[in-house]
Length: 274
Picture 1: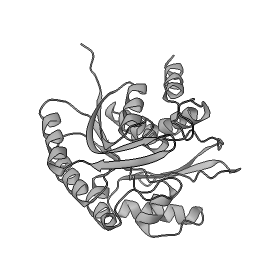
Picture 2: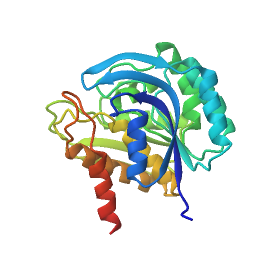
Picture 3: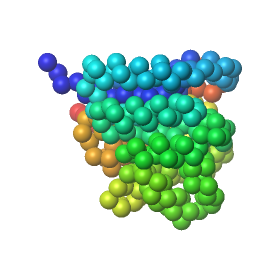
Picture 4: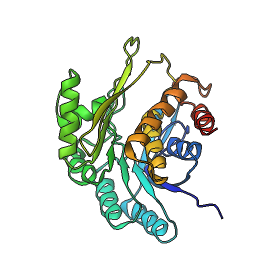
């Protein structure tokens, strides 16, 4: 019998399949791990936008934790959209009791374009209850600014923000670089590891509107690698290359903003194994 590595996403569901739990499960599959999901919310959306949303009741989220804990050997997990105080509290309570391995926290609170995704009242609770659970924290540029209440105007400010997030309890921190239309400079992600090592990962900016699920996939590949027992540094580097490859190779899905190409990332993984 094959020793099947298993990972868990605790996230919202996007009905168009481009982001949230669908993107996480695509990424888990592409990286060769079996994916489980705890649903926190659902949105009715397509490539033009989101038209309705529904947050799951806290008791339903807790029940999902209970039944997965009773049956499966999950080696790593990640969070996505947590939505509000009730969801944050139940996820923090249940994860602290579960044996799901290291937790990757993707703070789905602000989009790469600056749109808000978390109730304003929930930010302090997120800092207090979720960040200290994070083996790896993966905010985008805007999320890092919001969580640290800093203006990230240069590299030095980004480094200091990562250190502050580490002081909040996250063991390892990746602050993902900005993606701006017409950008000429490379996209640069800053990585601060638990042992104090720090470095930048740089990829050429790709001018495309097929970037839905970028952050979800980045954190999901890290999670999948941790489930395999890979060290955080190697997991982050692999996730960075996977996502860049998935953005470079556009998919024709939908009429406007579309998903990244997990098949291209899977092909990259397959080629590197040979």
